[in-house]
Structures are given as structure tokens and as C-alpha cells.
Image (cartoon, rainbow, N blue to C red):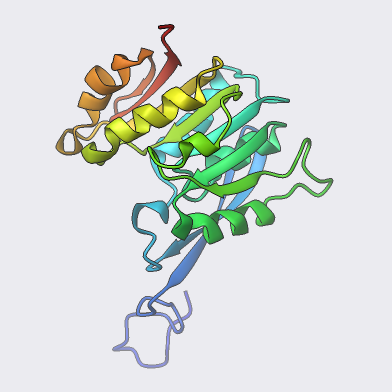
Length: 222
């Protein structure tokens, strides 16, 4: 750390701590892929700004279980920084990254920063706005996988998310959801009551230290 000449000043020069917006670039090595992810703080992105442990947990789970991604059609909901979906694209999936409109510049920047030297194995990831329960019908239902990392924290959105997932999974897509189990946000309630109302739900991985669960879900036949 480079310090200013004033020994009474504990902060480095130009550290951005007092700027309205600042960014942090972090390199993650996941499934043999090196991803450089920019996190933009103070830009009204809120929970969409950082890379959450639930996202990294899901990436590790996909590797440990050898989930086939090459050639698969994948959509990520509430993508935030895009680390999960970008990893899937680097491994050969055709990926659509979705979130609220405000987060899309961060998502697009991370996609561009992580294009492999030889180009994407399939098509470049697509970045699109998606508001659960509103414009999900504008999206197709022919996905292979739906990925969700730490998006279960606002109870008023739970019915909208279930409705969105049901539409996306009409043709048999499998959903992987990774969540920190926050009782104060009724996250367990989503997995015990809301999601099972339409889906078969299975707990497939638990990280006790991080209090993080990964679930695998598929739409029940009516």
C-alpha cells in the first residue's frame, strides 16, 4: 500500500473510499478458468454489486458433480456480476444472463472482459433485462439449465420467481439454486413451501460453514 506523506492520514492516495462510485477487480480461478470480475460499488446496484459466496459455491458444485455444460442452453436469473453464467459460457454453454436493467452495464462489461483469447466456444453470452413475473413470457422455454445464485432474499418476489421459473422450465429445464439460508429473509420458507408448490425440489449440497444450500429443481408435470 502506498501511503501519503502525511503520517496522520491512514488512507492511501486515490483509494476511492470517498468516491460516489468505485470498482474492485478480482480474479477467480474456477473449473480451470481464470475469470476477472469487476464489482461496482456505490452505483445503486445494491446486492447486485458483489460476488456472493453462494455464486462461488454453485460454480464449485457444478465442477464437483461434473454437470455437463458444453452445448447446453443456459439462462441465469439475477446474474449480478455474471460470474456463474460467464463460467458456464467459458465451458461451452450458450448463455443468457439476465437481471434488472440497472445491472446490465456491469454484466456486459464482465462478459467483454472474460472473452477467451480464441473466442467463445459457442455464441457470446447474451445480456438481457428480466423482471420476474412481468416480462418472463418474452423468453423461450427451451432451456437445458436455469442457474440462480443468492437471489432468494425478498419474500414479496417469491411468487414472481416461481412463476418465472415455471415458464422457463416448461420443456424440462433443470434449475440449480444456491442460497445462503437467511431466516430473517424467509429463505427456508421459499424452499420448503413456495418452490415445492410447482417443482420437485432436492437439496444436493450443504456448506455448513457458510450456511449455504444448493438445490436442484424440476417442474412437476401437471
